[in-house]
Image (cartoon, rainbow, N blue to C red; front, side):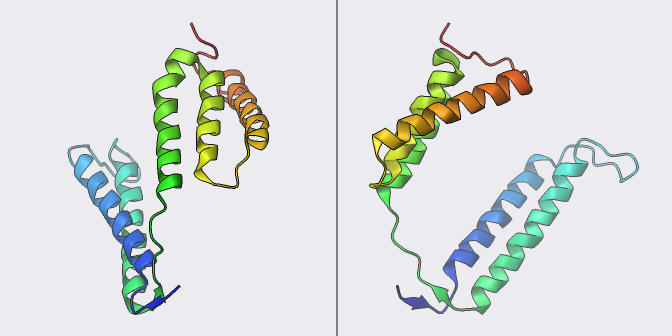
Amino acid sequence: MTRSRIDWQDLLFGLFLVAVAAATLVATRKLNVGNAADMGPGYMPRVVSFGLLAFGLFFCVRGVRRAGMAIEAVQIRPLLAVLGAVGIFALTAERLGLAIASVVTVIVAGFATRDGRLRETVPFALALSIASVLLFIKVLALPVPVWPR
């Protein structure tokens, strides 16, 4: 991999954090902030946003001031597999239930790597599905359907 005069990874990460902080500050601008003794609904989002903004600026400055490795080309397979898995979960969680949607999501996400094998991914998906049902349904008592209706 080639070296670059700018650490693009730090710079882009810093810009991302600054953008998220700015969007949050804009989105919460009409909320009452209050003060530390009497916090309003906008207090914590603002505090977290300013912290995020500080970290973002730190990474931006660090990225510009030091050399770094060039960013690799985007790999399309992992990108599509992870985005597809998130989309499938969003579309199937309510209809198929948490148990089945979790299994399908992990199997689709397993296609992100060429090294993934179905005989390893399926048991992992089943274990994660059981763990998610135990956590979200039994421990947290969320009203999420476990099986199809």
